[in-house]
Length: 162
Image 1 (spheres, rainbow, N blue to C red):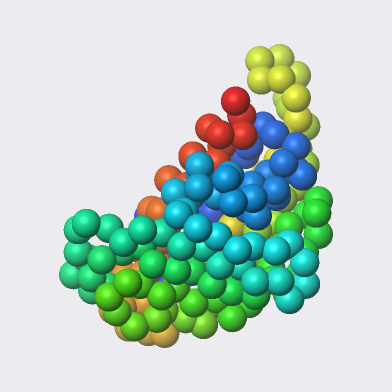
Image 2 (cartoon, helix red, strand yellow):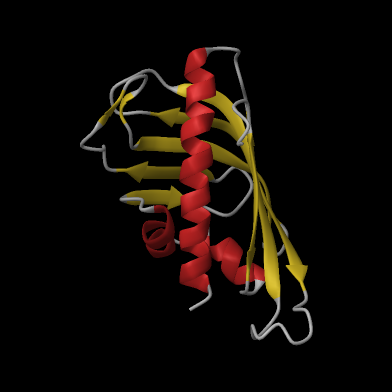
C-alpha cells in the first residue's frame, strides 16, 4: 500500500541514464510520458521546473478538478545521476496550492543480467517527494500522486524502451 505522507517509487528503465534524465526536462518527452500540456524546465541550478496539465473533466471531492501546475526550483542537477527540486508546489485549478515540498530524482546505471533477453544496460530511477502536514488534504494528495507517478513512470518506461 502506498504511503500517504510521502512518495517513494523506483522503476527500472532499459535506456541510458542521460536519456532518462533528458525525459524529465524535454517538453515533448514530458508531454508524451507525463501528459503535460506545457512546460518550462531548465536543467541547471536555480532553473525553473514548471509543468502544466489540462484540468480534468471530473471533480475530486477534496481538490475539485485535477491538473493545474506543478512548480519548483532546481537546486541540484547532475546530467548522469539526477536532480533535486525545492520549493515545490502543486496549484490545482480549483483549490489552494499544496506545498511546500521537495522532489528528487535519482538515476543509477544497472547492468543487464546475462541471458535476460533485453538488449543494453538500464537505469534505476527513484523518485521521492516529501513535504507533509498531518491533514486529510495532504494524505489525499499523496494517495493521488502515488497512483499518478506509478502510471507516469510506466509511460516513461514504455516511451524510452522503444
